[in-house]
Structures are given as C-alpha cells and as structure tokens.
Image (tube, rainbow, N blue to C red):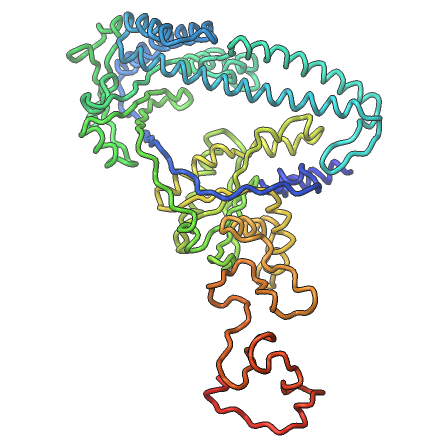
Length: 567
C-alpha cells in the first residue's frame, strides 16, 4: 500500500520536488544564487537533399563507407594508445590518413575521434561515480539490523533475511563491476562502439524491434558512415571538402582512391540536387559569401530513405543581460514536470499577475517525437512570455544524473523511469538557444524546496472560484520569486509585542525606495497628524492626547483642523 501511494505521488511531482523529496526534512541545505545562463555559441540548420539520382546515391554510399572505415581504424588506434597519447602520435595518425584520403579529411576524422574518446572518458567517470554511490548505500544498509526504521534522509535496514541476502549479492556484483571500471580508468581504456551501442544490441532482438537482418544491416552500416567535413575560413565558401555555393550547388571532394568517380575538375563530384535552407538562410549566406568557416554533414535516414545535409558554424557567445536588468520587467516562473510546463507571470516585486498557464507535451514514443514535443511546448511558452512584456524566464537548474539509481530509490521503478524520462540536458540547450533568438534571458535557480514551499505559501491564497491552482502552479510562483531575488514567503513574521510597524515594514521584497510598500507613512508637518510615528513629533508618545475613547482627551474641547492640514 505504501509503495503504491508513493508511485502515485511521484507521478504528480514536479522536477524540483523530485530532488527535495529524497533529501528529507533534515537541516535545510544552502540555496544557490540565481544566475543568467549564457547564450548559445553555435548554430545548425538542415535541409533535405531532394531529387538525387541513383548515381549520386551510389557515390555518397561509397564515400561514406570508405571514410567510415578510416574513422573506425583511427578510433581503434586512439583507444589502444590510452594515456600514452601525445601530439606526435596524433600527427602520425593524421599522416597515415592523409596518404589514403586528403589532409582535410584526415583532420576531420582525427578531431572526431578525439571528441568521441573524450566523451567516453566522461561517461566512464560518471559510471564509476554511480557505482561508488550504490556500493556505499548497500554497505550502509547491510550493516544495520533487520527491520530498523530509517529516517527522512536515509533508509533503514532491510525488512527480511531474504531481502538482505539478495542485496548482499547485488553488492558483490557492483563491487566486481567497480573493480573492472576502475582498472579501465587507471589504464585509460574506454569501450566505444562506432554507430552506437543501442543499434548494436538491437541485432540480438530483431523480433522485438520488428526488423529483418537485412534492414538492421542497412541501418547499422549507415550509422557507421563518415560523411562530414570541418569548415576552414579563407577557403572558397568556407569549406574545401564539402562545398555548398550560395545558389545551392553541392559538391564533394572525393578521397584519392575514389577519384575516378568524379564528374568535375579536381576530383570533385557535383550532386544533381540543390539545397535551399529555410531557416537562417541569410546568416548562412553571409558566411559563405565572405568565405567564413562552415561545417557540413551528410547522413541518410534509412527508415525514410531520405538524405539530409546539415550546416553548422560557430558564432560569438550571445551576451546575456545583467541579472538586475533581467529582473526589471518582472519574471515568468516555469516549473518543469513530466508532462507539462507550469508558468506564472510575476511583477518586479514578486506578486503573481493573472492566471497560471500550462503548456503540455508528451514524452512517450521515439526520440524524435519527444524532441518535437519539447520544441513545440517551448515555442508556445516563449511566445506567451513575449506577449506578457517580460524579458526573462526563471527555470529550475535540474540535474538528475545522480538521482536515478536503483540503490537510491529501491523498488520504485516507475519513479526511476519518470526521472530518467525527463530530458533535462536537452531542455536546457533548447530553451537557451530558442530564448536567445527572441531576446529573452534565462535565469537558472536552485530547485530546492520550490514545490514544497510554493504549495505551502501560494497555492491556497491564489485559489478562488474562478482560478484553480495546482502544486505545480504554486511551484512556478516560488521559482519566479527566487529568480527575482525575493524569498518564497511573501511576508515576514509580525513583530513580537504588537501589530505595529515600528520595527520596519513586513513586505520583504520591497526596498526602501519602493512605492506602495508597507512602511510607516511620512510625517506631515503641523501641530497634529495621524501619520506621526509613536517616537516622533510633539505628541507622538502621549496616548492620552489622541482623540480615542476612554481617554481624557474625550472630555476636553478641541477644534477641527482646516482642510489643507487634514489632507
């Protein structure tokens, strides 16, 4: 029963709540300072290669297969080198590739090899850290007596001897894996599969993937092809290997062994199709006409039978707004959830304006479907933000890299799948690049306690007969207030002795120069005023001089002040 209730609660949680739920109610951890995320430093556009002839496809397949074999051999040599890699070995590998292709193709292949090796090392380090965390959790729980209750911050002992025995076997497995990974790490040895490990494993599950061996073979070979070229400033149209002219003509510099397939001068092959970018065509055209570097990649979508050309280039990092400038027009707080974005607009003082907005998406299905859903939801969110007149969006800085292990969440498989299914890394990249194009700043905030405190302080006050608030909507208010630099709770505790404001105003987000803040009103000069503070003025401390009931002043004669003095 308890596990079932936890699963239902997990589905309703927001991103920030997922992390704080596991932290428990111990001492509150320190909250990181909000910051403005840096803008994108690169751009990529893609177009389909339409109306290719059979000869064009044959040449592209031959070039991709040949250069893919070179890339595989180079990656094998780099992995064999391990920690012994140096500039001389890099130059030696490049010279070997230049002899069988060209210097530019060799440079592109060796650079891609080093990027892939570095990525494998980072993944290896993350895997090693995950194994160490799991081993530590299992050892601690195995050392506790059976049935010992845990706390909010740490689980207790196992419930039965059978579970204790199974977890001890699990510990032995993790220790063996950790020993192997640690040995590979010290030796500089990585496990890399060109084409991807998932397509490789699909070979053993063709029936589940609904593929024949021939279909799988075509996809596997297409993933291992290498049809890419880095740009080079100063060369014609920014790239000497794969050249795309401003009028859309595509030509490929063939490797030396395939030069007999050329249909143009200098060993080049010109495709029969023309490329016309629909997105960022002006920026791309400016680069190629000024001979600035543009990188190209050609790949085949086997399932659709379509060829695509992707152009990418670097550009200076988009300058972000200062944090104070981003907060000047208010903020839109966004709470990331498993199926929607919950957004709320706040003014510069942290007050919610209007009604909450929700932008739904569906993360089931293929990777392409999930990516499209995220893009569409972000597009609706960003355009609504611009219509509100706000220049910044506050969003949680989520990272579930160390929060989805079996040892941390036990048997709650649905909860682990929920966390793993949230594309936090892709979401960060998408929203930063898309917001930069619309002139919006992204303010990243610490996700700690946002759902808990938002539900406690904002859900009930904002609920009315015409407005229904969820805990996700309340969390978006909390995120927006944290991005604005205000505490999540609107008012501080009242003074200890009475309900006056002699100790200062209680609206915590208002500064001393803010208009309309809850502070003692300025004193109007004159013989008598109701705006004088108790410790100022001639009669400020004499309560009997005030015209109130049960005071001696009631029995004395007095005269009504003139109208100008009573204003």
